[in-house]
Length: 70
Image (cartoon, rainbow, N blue to C red; front, side, top):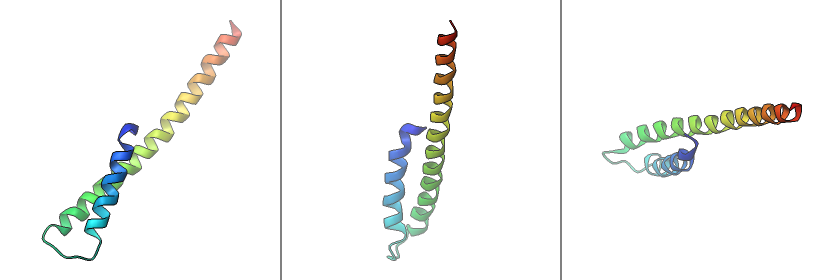
């Protein structure tokens, strides 16, 4: 999921600029909804990156300790 972070960020910025610019057009509500979904995807992607990096650090630390014991 962390490889999609940049994609979600760009999609969120573009849809935010189009949907909340104040210009009224037929698809504005759809674009606002897409912005909401992309923002949620961005948050999940960022949290996933943080959680996985913590787990990887913990795993590396454990492996390093096991190598020292041997």
